[in-house]
Amino acid sequence: MTAAKTEPISLSMLRAVRRASSLDDLLGDLASQVSKAAKVDGCEILLRDPGDGLVLAASTWVPEYVHRMRLGKGLGIAGAALLAAEPVFLPSHAGQDPRFLPYPGIEEHTDDALAVIPLQIDKEPPFGVIVFRKQEAWPLPAARRQALQMLASEVAEACTAFRNAYQTGAVTSRLGQVTEVTRTIASSPYLEEILQLLVNLTAQRFNYKVCTVRLLDEARHELVLRATQAQDKAYQRKRAIKLGESIAGRAIDENRPIIVPDVQAEEDYIGHDLAAEQGLRSMICVPLVFRDRPLGVLSCYTSEVRDFPPDEVGALETLAKQAAVSIEHAKLQVRDTLMQEVHHRVKNNLQQVASLLRLQVRHSQYKSLEEALNDTLARILAIAAVHDLLSREDLDHVDIGSIGESLIQHQQSSLILPDRKIHFEVRGDEVRLNMMQATQLALVLNELILNAVEHGFKRTVEGEVHVTVEQHDDEVALWVANSGDRLPEGFDSETSSHLGLQIVANLTRSMGGKFSLRDILGWTVAEVKFPRASAE
Image 1 (tube, one colour):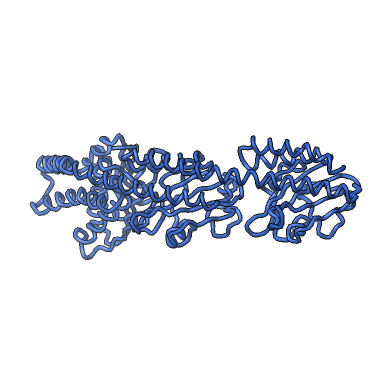
Image 2 (cartoon, helix red, strand yellow):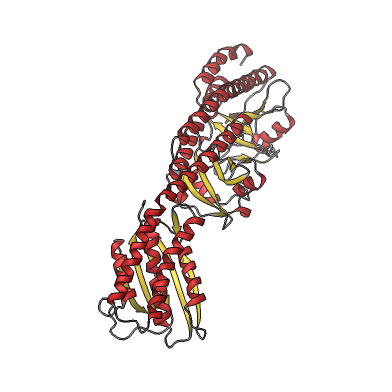
C-alpha cells in the first residue's frame, strides 16, 4: 500500500460526513470504508470515555460488541496506544503480546497481526484509537505504516468535522427546539398534559431514548414519577425515590444539572437492571425550580455513552425553567378552578349530609339523641377530611391511605372507649382518587372503621384494625379487617346489616363496585372493590 492510494477515500469520507445522521452512523460507515481500503480482515474504532478508558464505537470484526465492550484506563493494546499517544504495530503473533486482551467468547488466531493507531488532530490528546486486524502474519514496512496512519488521520478529521458541524448546527437547532417545546407546553392549562408534552417533545426533539419528570412530594421528601414517554410498563411503574438516595435528589439539593456518563456503571444509580433492559446509558438530571422553590426534576437518557455539550445543557436548563413556570401556572389555574367550584361541591356535600340525616330519621336504632348526633358528626368529618387533604395534597386527587389515617386519628381521639386498646394500621398501594370518588370512599371508609370499632370490640378489649389498599390495573380493592368479636353465626350482610353498612352498600353500588362482609380466619373482613375513575 502506498500513500497515493489513500486519496480517493478522502472524498468518500466527506460524503460519509454529509449523509451521517449520528456519530454512530458515521463511525460505522468509516470503519467499513477503511477496512476495504486497507484490505484488512477487520477494523474497529474505540472512543475515549470520561474516565480515560475506551468504548467500542464501531466494528466490522465484532459488531455485536459495539457499545457493550469497554476497556479501563490503559488496559489492552488499545489502552496502551491511547495513553502513550503512539501507534502500536504487531506484524504477527499479536495474541502473545502481554498487553493483548481477547474478546470474551471470540476465538483469536495466534498469528493475528494488529495495527493500533491513536485518533487525534495535530498535537491534541487522542480522542480514541482505530484498530486494523489481519488473521495472518502481515508485513508492516514503513510505507504501509505511514499509509495506515494517514487513514487514521483522515478518520480523525472526518469525526472532528462531523462534530463541529453538529455543534454549529446544534446551537441554532436547539434554540428552535426549546422554543417549540416551551410554546407547546405553555398552550396547555392541564398539569398532566403539560408533563406528558414535556417528556414526549424533549425526547423527540433532542433524540433521547427516555425522558421522565418526577415531581417533589415535600411531605414525604420523595420524587414521584409523573410522566415518561417510555412505553415499557415496568418503567412506568417505577417507585417514588427518596431525595437523599437518588442522583435526581442531588440535582435538586445542589440546584444544578447532574450528568452521569453511564448509568449502567454508576454505583449510585437506582435501577441498573431496568437500565440495562431498556438500553439506557448516559443521563442528565435537570432540576425544575420556580422562584428558588424546587418542583421536581427532568431526567433525560441516551442510548449510547456520550457527553452532554455545554449548549445542550444550557438548552435543557432553559427548557426546565420554562417548564417550571408552566407547571406552577397550571397548579394555580387548577386552584382557581377549584375555588370557582367550591360552592358547587359544598352544595353537593350538604345534599349528601341531608340524605344521610333522612336515612337516620327513618331508622329507630338509636338509643339516644347523643348517639345519633355522634354518627352524624363522624360522617360530616369524613367529608371534611377529604377537603382538608385536598388543600394539602395534589390539588384535585387524594390518596386513600391519607383518608384512612385522617379518619383513624379522629376515631382514636373521640370515639374509642378508654378501656379499649386498639392498634390501627394503614398499608398497601398509594392510590389517588378524584374529588367525587374520594368523598364517596371517605364515607365508606368512615362507616367501616366505625363498624369495626363499635361492633368488633363490644366484648373484646384489645385487638387490631387493618386498613389495606390495593390497585390492580383500573380496579381498587379496600379491606377493613378487625381481630375483635367474630360475626354471629349465619350473618348475612344483605339482611342483617344496620344503617352504616347499608350506607356502605349503597355508596359502593354508586361507584360501580361490590361490598361484602365475612369472617376470614377469625378476622371480620369488610371488602369493597370498585373501578377507579380516570377523571372527575
